[in-house]
Length: 283
Ligand code: CAA
Image (tube, rainbow, N blue to C red; front, side, top):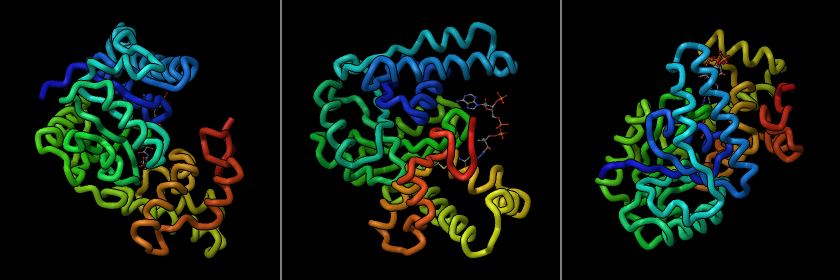
């Protein structure tokens, strides 16, 4: 199936990154947010990042404005009616996503593909209330979406093979390095990364190491591009705790459960970069 027009539902940090990739790759893109203000905020961020790419010589002059012109904003699902592919990047709650997919199904064409960017929920469960679960697929991008090359293309229980391969080919058109995988808890990367980050946080309490030294240890001793505390702050502690709980619920392995320190921080609103404070402070 040919993808010409794309929609991204939810323009938080992941959604706006995905919308940025789509317009940069030449796709007409509709971004849907709950309020016009949230949509405009995402558009301003996309505009800023693309202008910076021009400054750095990573994009031709004028290509940034042309890309931003391909983005339209809406709060109304009806404006997604002629999209070939909808990528949902909304709040990580099964109920929210199930409800959203039902609303989407009511407006899009019968052959439109519905993709979820969920990081830890089951794509099969998200699809379970739709009338056509065979058109639902997982497309899991990594944070920050414009910079991280990987996209996990997730085959849910009833995903149609053609839908699956179209999602894979679309990720390649965005310049990404997609992989194919099944709909198992955490897919590939989070199944490994979530317990690993949890272990890193437990080490903070056990080894008497400072946050800075923990980061130094994993950067210079294990070759990580950024230390675990910096990475958790980037991902968002609320997102991490939520993914961790979702994995623990499915797998019941103690290492999957969020360490108390992380749960406390998330509850207190120390969410990392986006809230201005996590393991580190951000101005
Ligand atoms: N578009 C364009 N440019 C962007 C951007 C965007 N949306 N966001 C940031 N940038 C730019 C920055 O502005 C910066 O450029 P300038 O400073 O020149 O303005 C540049 O990208 C990044 O600069 P850095 O020097 O920080 O780049 P780096 O070489 O250190 O790489 C990184 C940054 C790719 C994030 C790297 O540190 C890295 O790979 N970190 C690990 C990230 C990771 O593991 N992510 C996965 C998280 S897990 C997850 O996402 C799964 C989940 O489901 C929760």
